[in-house]
Amino acid sequence: MRREPYKAEHRGVQQRLYSDGPELPPRLVHRAHLPWLGTYKTKMQTEGKSANTQKSYILSLRQFLETPLPGENILTESQRDNMDVLELLERVDPFNGRLDLWVQSLSDKSPSTIKARLAAANHLVNWLGQKWPEHLVRPKSGKKLPRTLTRRELTMLRDAASCSEDPLANLVVTILLETGLRVSELCDLNLSDIDLSDCSARVIGGKGDKDRLVLFTKTTVENIHAWLPLREGRQPVGDNLLITNAGTALQSRTVQRLMDRLADQAGIPRGRVSPHVLRHNFATGLLERGADLVSIQRLLGHASIATTRVYLEISDQTLREVYRRAQNSTQDEQL
Image (cartoon, rainbow, N blue to C red):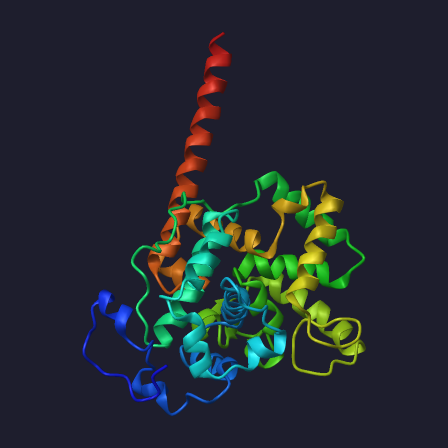
C-alpha cells in the first residue's frame, strides 16, 4: 500500500488494476496513523451532523467493516474500532470487493434502510478520498407521506394525556403538538432556553446544528408553569426542562415509552403514536389554518423547503377525503 501523499491527477478505473492500492488525500496523510473512529467522528461534528445521524452512520459503518472477504478472519470489536486511518483505507478500498459483499447482504432490507446505509458508506469513502463505484446506486423508493393522527385520534390522545397519572404526559403531548419539536430537541430543551413571558424558546443545536425559535401557545405556557414545582421536587441535576423521577434528563426512548402507554390508554395502535407523528400533526395543522410554507419551514427547522412541501400532499389527500364524504352525504340525501 502507498504511504506517500496522494497524487492529484485523476486515474482511470482500469489503471487501478496495476497500482499499489488506494492513496490517502493530502488532508489525511498526517492523520494516517491515528485511530479512525475518533478522527471520523470529529469530521462529522465539524460538518454539523446531528447526534442521531452520527450514531446511524457509525452503526452502518461498523457492519460494513465487519464484512469479511473470502479467507479473512472475523474482526474483533477492538480491531474494528482501533484500526488507524491507513488500515481503514485498505479495508474499505472500493475495489477490493468488500463494499459489494456488504451491499449484497442488505438485500432483505427496505429501500429506505439501504439508502441510509449506503449514504453512510458513501460519506466514509469520500472522506478517504476514494471514488464511489458507479455500479452501486441507491435503490428507488416510493415517496411515503408523513403519518398523522386523525382529529378523533388526537382528541383521544389528549384526553388520555390529561387523565394520566404521569405528570409529564400532558406537558409532553402539548409541547410536541403545539411546537413541532423533534423528540431530541424536546429532551435537550433547557430552562435557560425558555422565555415564558415571550411565549417562546430557543432550540440550540437542532438538526444540522442549527438554532431556531419555537413559539408556545397559552396552554403550553400554563402547563409548563404547572410542571415547574413538580420538577423542583425531583431535585434536578441539570437545567433540562423535562426530567425523570431521579432528576436526570428525559431520554428519547423514555418519551416513546410514554407515547406507547398513552396509545394503549386511548385505544390507538401503538404504531400510530410517536413524537414524530405529533410533529407531523403540528405541521399539517398549521397548513390547514392557512400558514405559508416558509413560516412552517422555519418553525420545523427544515434545511430545505422541499422537505416541508410534502405536507401539501397530505392536505390534498385530506381535501379529497372531505370532498368524498360530502359527495356521499349528498347522494344519500337524494336517495
